[in-house]
Length: 63
Image 1 (tube, rainbow, N blue to C red):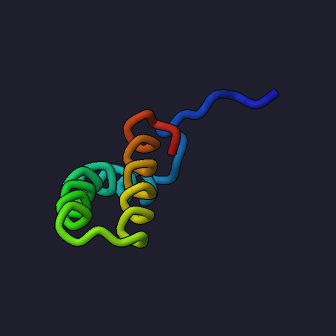
Image 2: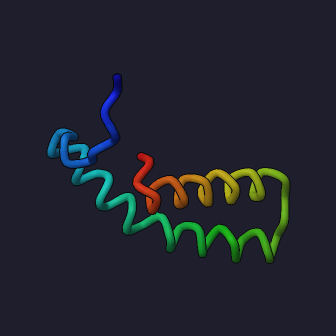
């Protein structure tokens, strides 16, 4: 049976990368939201949806 996810069991380099990605994802989402409001294209919506999903996964500690 599989144990629960524990981010402390990850290698050090991956924990550091996760930490910095978690800190920078919100400003990137904000920038992309402003970009979608100014010049809305289908690619911008897809990128924003992907970034929001990534943000949700980071802050719920799923990745």
